[in-house]
Image 1 (cartoon, rainbow, N blue to C red):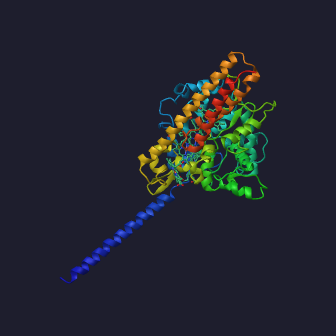
Image 2: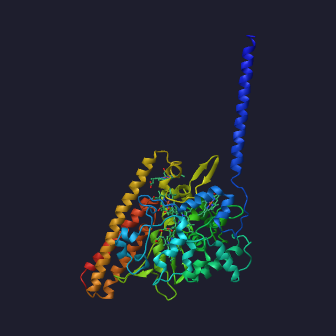
Image 3: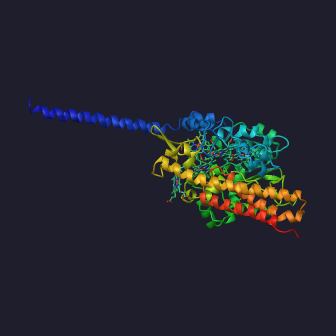
Length: 481
Ligand code: HEC
Ligand code: HEC
Ligand code: HEC
Ligand code: HEC
Ligand code: HEC
């Protein structure tokens, strides 16, 4: 009897080990099955499937996080924590002086989640009388890839909606619809749309591959590719430039997956011209830096032959420029772009759900999500990461404050000279300095990261803004001839 005990123990241990191995195998199998079930294929998705809820049947996890963009979030400088979107004009009254005579002096609020983009646009006073806006405003505030194509086909563009979007035929449908809808009065155009940015705007419905569908972006990025200014942040442009360029640059054909993780956001988070005088465009023909865009605007002539300007300043008469959210442009000048870190790496980081890794479609401030957004690359504590961001943003905020003060001083000085009946010719140089300073202050003020995307570049631009504003004042101190 005694001699059999070790055998029994061995057999028992072997049996337990076998059961454990089997359990482990089952567990792995379950996880693999679970991972495979990322796609349930319940709904048949096509180019006509605009409603994200339909896509949600196949991709419930991404859809759930997408819906969360309706939740209110706020950080020190980001988002909007109030029940109503923060009124920037109350928060910073200098903006009323800076934008005098322009729609932004009437209503200007903090951005919030993607879920609100269409309703916030419909509600802003900037689209109400006395301001006239066009359907071009919709390009970045609605799901419109399908709407543009349908309208394009209706108006004589070749092919059908079944044609692939990324093809000569698909693009010509898209462009035609974009031009027609862009010219409609806003009130009419907005009736055609019923969703904020949706799955179909960033994904091919069959392959799910990322794609860019905003017409002005496709045209703008092509102009940037043609510009020959350095483009290390978009390697596929560098590669395309080295070739024979027989076919225009097309990100949908040439950009890598990692580049697309930025370009889908660059479709909308960029500087643009959207007014009654010409088709919506992105001013990238000379490059993406503040002074390259300024040079393009300075050389641009409207149909009536007049130099480009956004509005005539009510207090000074200067022909001024308004910048809007140049996130893609500023990211382009920063260390993260240089290191190949995409918008989605920080704003849509991977998240684990069981065995499945998904991209978080709750697009928001990464500071609400530092573990997933930053700590995958920066292996130091959350507080330390936050501390570094705070330091950058606070310094930027201080410099921005000084720039706005300088801006207001110059505006008051020009207004005083006008009131003292200075001649037009005597005011000219000071007004030109206002245009230059205004463009730079606004480039950083309207950029939404409070300097984070490219700290040194932001400081450089603000330094120039202060210099130009003070030079404008000095101009007015010179004795009159
Ligand atoms: C390395 C990480 C990182 C990358 C890459 C990045 N961002 Fe950001 N972004 C941030 C941080 C940090 C903030 C500041 C958030 C805050 O103040 O709450 C920010 C702020 C923003 C905001 C304002 C957010 C808010 O809640 O108000 C927008 C919009 C934005 N980024 C868009 C972009 C776009 C578009 C790109 C790519 C072209 C991009 N970001 C690339 C980290 C990043
Ligand atoms: C169709 C145009 C469009 C695209 C594409 C787009 N955005 Fe936005 N984004 C907007 C608009 C418009 C708002 C402001 C909505 C509002 O205030 O009602 C916004 C707001 C945001 C905010 C602020 C969120 C908050 O809670 O305050 C962040 C961050 C942001 N976008 C990042 C991104 C990133 C990253 C991408 C790419 C993955 C992206 N966006 C793609 C148009 C777009
Ligand atoms: C090139 C894309 C683009 C176009 C064109 C565009 N927007 Fe936006 N808009 C955005 C983005 C991105 C945001 C979020 C970032 C921000 O608020 O700075 C935004 C934010 C807004 C907001 C919320 C914050 C605020 O400024 O009060 C309103 C309202 C708005 N846009 C109205 C309009 C109107 C009106 C037009 C047409 C004149 C227009 N937009 C054209 C991209 C665009
Ligand atoms: C503003 C652009 C944008 C919109 C809108 C968008 N996505 Fe995505 N989606 C992305 C990006 C960026 C990725 C990451 C892709 C990659 O890394 O290749 C992604 C990835 C995915 C993936 C691949 C798996 C994963 O999670 O990485 C699925 C599935 C997906 N999205 C479904 C959806 C669905 C469903 C919707 C609508 C409810 C949607 N997406 C809306 C940008 C977007
Ligand atoms: C995919 C990797 C990656 C992610 C995600 C990432 N970073 Fe970085 N970060 C880098 C790299 C690479 C550098 C450059 C440092 C170097 O080359 O040594 C950098 C640099 C920085 C710097 C120094 C900036 C400067 O101008 O010198 C700060 C601050 C920073 N990151 C903060 C963040 C924050 C905050 C987040 C999350 C919102 C974040 N990073 C997300 C890779 C990443």
